[in-house]
Structure formats: structure tokens, C-alpha cells
Image 1 (cartoon, rainbow, N blue to C red):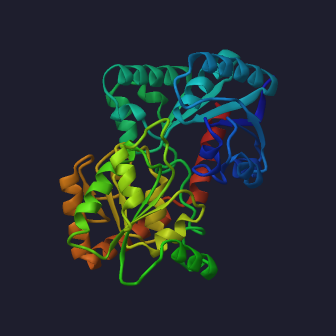
Image 2 (cartoon, helix red, strand yellow; image 1 turned 120 degrees about the vertical axis):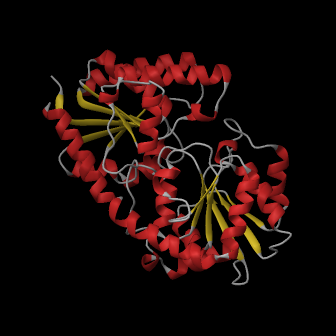
Length: 387
């Protein structure tokens, strides 16, 4: 007998529950669902448990292709599902989706949801791309419902025949978690934290700060960003680049020359990790996001809520949020020449950039409000249970 109020939420690593989905498990629990979280172990697990008053079970999933370990995790998940008897299994992130959906189908779970928050295959070629396509199709075949987190991602899935269109639904207006308009609000920043952040970057009113937030990996466009910044320094000596994020040398390493530039260029400031990204957004002048692939990037919502002018690549997800020359500037992905031209345009017309940021702010804070998103997701769960 399945428990109609029980939801199991699965991501590959705890960071994906702790940050992109922050507050969501708690909300579902507060609205009458029994929520169980599943992920691998990791340094963010303790923070996750402190923030979300829901049970957590460790399943040692990996983000790499590890067939033997993956099989062990599927068997462990089947055992957990049969013991817990949830009404809904909801996965997010590629590996959790594949293992979780297969295990849920084998265990006989009636409602099996996978959220698509980005597709790594978009930047792959050859055999690896073929393998990743197969993995996506297997995940969607095992799911009863597929929830892409943006309209452009939905179109991509349909155009490439990954699954039947009747399986696909977007919650609210898109995103995986909406935007926290209380946290990402300049009026709510604390002066002592702001002073601390300014000190960490040796802040000067004479400088202009470009900000990037995300993993320091190839497919986030770090190579192009660092190269273009180095070129712009000659004409804009007051320019500074803040990179906030961790290296991932095992999964997607940067070229050694780019790492050397980040370490040795005194105008590039690398912040390895922070839970105060809103403060960096407040002191920055422009947010630059040259990613090669996204689903529906939360970080653009956050920058928009902080009224930080945005320059981003023309890819799925980004184009659902930013309209070129109306709410920000969009450049061609992987194109250093276009990125440089758009950055020069922004630097030479800061007033226009601020006006566009103001326009985007009003849209984001109403259309993507986090509480409205959570309510829409809760209603979607209930509709599926009723059916």
C-alpha cells in the first residue's frame, strides 16, 4: 500500500538539494506531504539537514559514468522505495534521474517525475553525445512525467524526439525553484557582511566590476571570459573580474593557461566558495554569464532581482529570461569577438544597461516569485495524485 502523502526528492549530490532547491522540500512538508530526500554524501549535507527539516537517505551516486556503482545504487534505491512506499518519486540532475526513474519504475511507483534542468549533451559530440542521448531517452521512458524548467528546453526535447510531448509539462513560468525575493533584495543586505565582501575583493569606487557566478569549468564559458577580459584590460585598466565558484578538475578541467591567468592576473579575483552571492551582485556593475548550456539558470534570476545588468550567451534557458537589448545583452556562445563587442557596448553605455536591468527586475520579481512557484508545484503534485 503506497503512502499518498509521501514524496521522495532525489538529486545526485547534496549541493543540488541545498542550493538550487533550497526551501522547496520544507515547503512541501509544511503543506502536508511527508518528504524524504536522497543524495550522495558530501560536504553540503550537514547544511542541507540544518535548513530542511526532512529525512535524508544517503545513496552513493556519482556524477561520472560508473556502471558497476550505478547498478548498486539502482538496487539500493529499489529497496528504499519498496520500504518507504512513496506516492511520488521526483528526480533532478542527470544521474539521479537515470537511476531514480529506473528504480522507481521497477519498484512500481505510480508517479515518477524527472525535472530537466539542463542537458550536458548539448555541448558534446560523437560517441559521448550518442551515449548521453540514450541516457536521456532511458530516463524519460522510465518517467511518467518530464518537467523541463524552461520553454526553450521543452522545445529542444520535443524537437529531438526524446519523449512523447504529452509527458512534458512546465511548472509555473519555468525555473526549478523560483526566486527568493527576500534574500535577493538590496534593501535586506547587512552592512557588516557588505563591508566584509568589499574587503575580500579590495573594493574601490574607481573600479568597474564584472561578476561571474558558477562552476569554473569549460562549459560555463570561462575560457572565453578570461581571454576577453585580458584583452579589455588594455583599454579599460580600471576593469576587474570577480569569479565566484569552484574548479572541477576531475569532471571538466580548464586549460592550464587559463588557470594561470586566473591565479596570476591581479585584476582577476577568484572567490572559491561563498553563500553570500547577493552581496557580490550588489557591489558588481555587470553580470557576465557565457555558459554553453543551461536549463533555466537561477543565477540570472538572482542577478535580475538584484538589479544587476546582465550580459549572457544565446542558449536555452538564458533566452527565456533575457531579451537582447531590451532586458540585457546577449552574445553568441563560444564567440570571443561577440562577447568583447557586447562588453564594450555595456561599458560605454552604463545608463542603458541600468535601464534594462530595471525592466527585467520588475518582470522577474512578479513572474518568478518563489512562493508562487512552490504553490504551482504543490498543485501539480496533487493533480497527479488525484489522477
